[in-house]
Image (tube, rainbow, N blue to C red):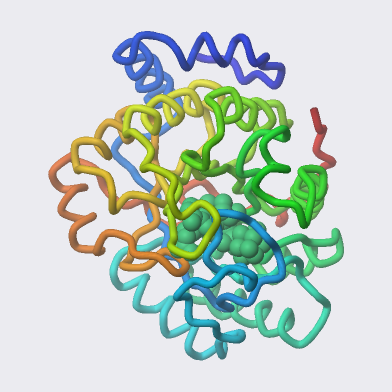
Length: 336
Ligand code: SAM
Ligand code: DTB
Ligand code: SF4
């Protein structure tokens, strides 16, 4: 069995990432099979519960108020509408509903109470609920955990060094601080990043190093290929070569053996063969459904056809057990 490490160096990560491609995929696939059912893929459905008008300046994001994009701004959706969408996603085969809000941080107001009601209602459908709502205090993290949130998504996006070039309105430490609060409250952590923003391979590996050196490892790591949206500062970024995606997924799988690695945004630009290589390299989760938060995603039926072709199947909810905040002693997370 591969041992779980929290002391990876950049040099070691470079050595892994730069192995001959087929050897890299083979090693990642072997580790994947030691720790996971290689046929099961966790399927999440995304819903933007509050869209656009965000005060942050994340250069990749179509929801930042300061960029002129075609995103239709809307305030927080009513609970009923969110639950109806979750029911449809469940009927289509999704085991997890991920609710996203274009907020810098959660505020203690009626909107937050409404989100807590959404979480409880979706939990009653026996679906896992994930939220991505921006920065959290420890107290807010506890409220989400107690309402039944399974995972909190909060991405590091890139290396600490590159972070300042894509976002100026918050720091890498702000992100790590929220992850620490999520961990203290016993929710599982979903944290990854984006490739294709103009960062170097070293920046991508720097992000993996930070994630791999968290103890415990994040339970889920989404790898997004940038969706270059017109009106954002990154609108002209060229698409990420599929080989970069395969290499970073394989490296993530090797350094985070037990983590669920999600092949996230950017799949509309990938061929079936390209995605197959990503699954081979250890990706075992996707977002399904025609929309991510604001941009297109492959149709659900097309994904199920791809699964059939590759012999994959959607994972049932809570296959990895109920969230740990039901355990008595929440733990502190060691930071690198
Ligand atoms: N506002 C909250 C936050 O920033 O944490 C939650 C929503 S935000 C849209 C969630 C994540 O989506 C970001 O951290 C980023 O990694 C990803 N994302 C946003 N725009 C993207 C794009 N154009 N392409 C790929 N990923 C993107
Ligand atoms: C994540 O890592 N990717 C998802 C989810 N977490 C919230 C978001 C992708 C957003 C892509 C751009 C959009 O649709 O607005
Ligand atoms: Fe706002 Fe999140 Fe988009 Fe940044 S990524 S602009 S915080 S919605």
